[in-house]
Length: 317
Image 1 (cartoon, rainbow, N blue to C red):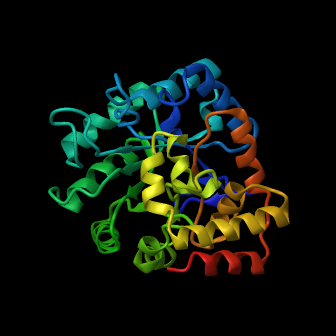
Image 2: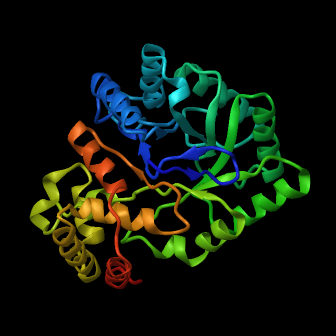
């Protein structure tokens, strides 16, 4: 599988990032292990998680995804065959939140312990922390890179102006810079990224690993009417947000191209993202080996220029 550079980090990644939020949530440990083995076998070896995954699930407190990955790493011995991205900053209990140097130093040790490794390939700010000066946050990250605990750093959920400011602070102070950006981006949610963030990413040579690549499942085509609300836990949100004239135009274009290429709307949606020059590796999840096969197929799908134009026009904002 062809690889792409992750910003200027020197790390090469496949065309898709696997979203590890499912580990220890909708995929139990045994299923997660089989998925991780299959990901390595298929060279989709870039895994994105976060310390907070999956604190939203009943009975969980955060750290579950990292723990499952760590258990698999210990059992499989495949640490050198995977690229692991995790994040810091979302609430993890009292006093455990944000991007202060004190908390970053504590959180990275917790993540390393759960992951059962001595280094993290990509360590990301999960949210912008406007209460901590950027220079302090970036100096703390820089220390971790110099100590060999982290290979590169990235930003998630940053607005364009703050991202530009952070990159300037790194340059002015000789500190490690954010090499990646993790924004919401898909065929439906285009405006937020394309308006300002995309230009920054291209100008600065950042790797972009976008989340909600399939719009919470809407772009798979399985939600087409209010009757489909019960198809998942997020069904009501999907129906209210996406089932409108523009959403139906997008589905019609996906159906047309899925038939043309003898594939699925999900694969067409991912192929559109992969083809966009500013996108490095869209994040997408699976909870079964069958779904994983579909992801592998999406990386092999080549859309023609006219296909991309059809999708661009149907999803125009």
